[in-house]
Image (tube, helix red, strand yellow):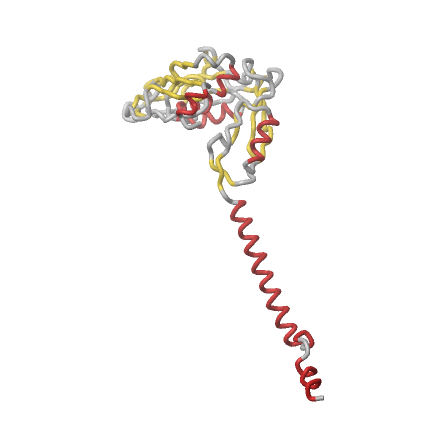
Length: 270
């Protein structure tokens, strides 16, 4: 009888509602902490910055596949017409290849249209060179040459030219056209440096040169580059002057040597 009585007093811990509620409360708090930890990890991973691939010359399907591999999205924001480029291929992108963005970011693509379309020439006079360059890109136009002339404001756009003639704002022009800019150059603010374009694809290299207030001089493509599409995939393996050459006068020319040869790409670590 005494043994049975002791068993009755002990019983299961779940028979005591106070103990049971305390245990359930502890388990509930533990579960909340675990879920919070998992959620924090997911958020941290989500906000992790990653390198944007260079989608230039890819089809939309190829760009989408490569974007999803690294946790990004792509969408077509606009199209231009480039005669020498394959139809539907990615012409430019924003943000640019090599930029750092958060995982899940959507990359805006400008693709090559099947037929040429006309756009309205914007007014660039009075803009800074970089503002004008961005405005041209937003309209589906390309920056051609930077023509520097003496002026009190360096890199201030003075004229906009198409085929060596001034073009007025509002003029209809084929998308993909190249626009030259006449820009100011103050003698006390006329120095710049060549960027390091080694390892960059053709269009990104051209973009980097322009961003440093310089022009593209000669372009030397290896024998393996036979089409315009090939040139878009070509990578710079040599440039002159180099990024270590010291200060240059704005508007100076940079010569680029580009290749698609595997052996040269391996030497660059690509």
